[in-house]
Length: 208
Image 1 (cartoon, rainbow, N blue to C red):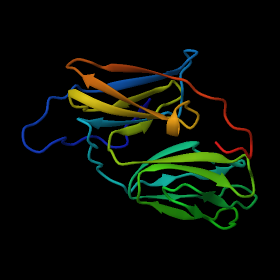
Image 2: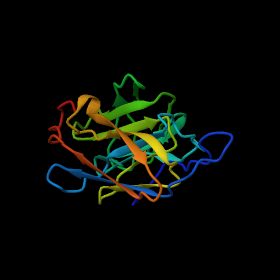
Image 3: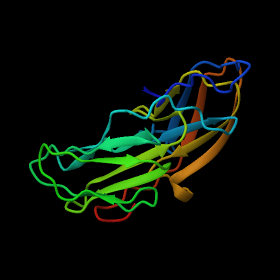
Image 4: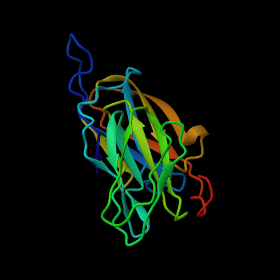
């Protein structure tokens, strides 16, 4: 089960809020199957939760002509490394308005890094291998993580009360591949189910 990017040390200064404890979010597709690699970002009271650290380390490796992991969640201010473990050279790039970059051809056991200072989605590709696709979700809240293979993610110390949830998946059928939900976390509440409708993954070379 995936855990949140960072724990919420204190939501608001002053009086301590009442906490509901762990909140487990379960994401399933229209067919009822669990959906992995869905990013869930929580905004208690509609505001970002503090991020305790942006130091990581954060990494997307190039291995077996694929990016690993397929989806990476990092906080604003993170430096992400892109090590190459393949026998061939790669040229990693993104045309995202969040952070446009290109890492010129580099070989096995070499690495490059990129600093991400704005929130948003950063799709990745390789100019040499069209089948290589990955995504970085740069988040501005400390309560953000992606679902595991069972479609589950757990958040610790979520305050009771209204919470805005941003649900994102690269193939989610919705504007920007995301939906925004409004929940109310009540005392003793421990779970929240989410159903999403996904489109098929793109073919190699096709824009996502």
